[in-house]
Image (cartoon, rainbow, N blue to C red):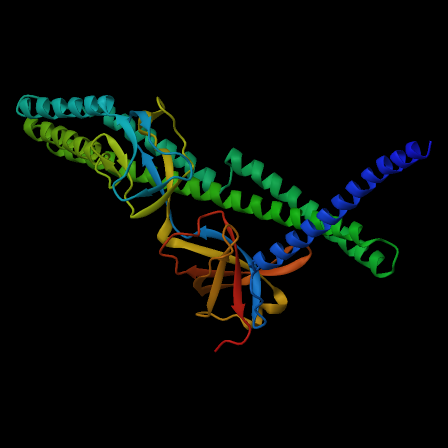
Length: 399
């Protein structure tokens, strides 16, 4: 019996010994790991504090962009770029099917050749030209009345919209004044006043938009009237020449030949643009970014000789950063000031820049008054890209 108890105690001690051994081993391993971490700890990189600078959020934008416009009939067969692609001088952007355009050139050349061949035998009738002049005079009279008397239907609609916008603006102003008084008296919360203030801002913007649209419509009418007058002068000049030399068939035909020659020259000039190389659209700037691609493979452009914008090219050499500076800090900023630009995409970079413009207008954003400050970066590696954001550090004490 005693032997049996002794054996049982031995078996009970074995798990205890094993548990103690595991605890001791775990403690030793933990100490080794902690020691290893202490020995291998690397310093954490962080943006250094700059007590002598003021930081402002900025957006990367540009000052120059070019429209790639086609004003002759053709088809886009292969678009070789996408939105946001970086391109260089001479790089192909798209391929064109020029067959229809070339047929028009051939047609005009045939007309010119036929005119030259019949120069001595053709007599030109002035009836159609006189009818065109009469029609142009009627059109000019009607357009003049639309412009001077503002009888144009679009202008009437806009004038009605203008009156409505003025009325809504007056109402919005009164609402803001009333709620400002209520807020000052503690009878209305700030968020309600902000809502009416926002409505006032929108009403002011709407009024400006209507006024701008009225001005644009008037300018369009004026442009159309000028074009009609120019067309009338051209037609009258042609008629006068034909009437003076109607007895001479050669003179009349010569006028027709000259018109054909001008049409042919104008048509050929449509494809002699710096961004067209034979049947390809190419980049005409050194460093560009593609945006607003408005076509795809198979798109017909320049139909009826109406200009079609194929895409836009941002000139990377015109990249700037528009920083948003709070009103209380604007007095520390001056033109020509040297600043540091840190891109959000890579805060390890620090790009020097120079203040080239300080807006004279302040705008409200997130409840604060901000002023746009334009900075020209010195960024030969093109790290800053349109639409990206960056922090701009302005020195508090300019050396």
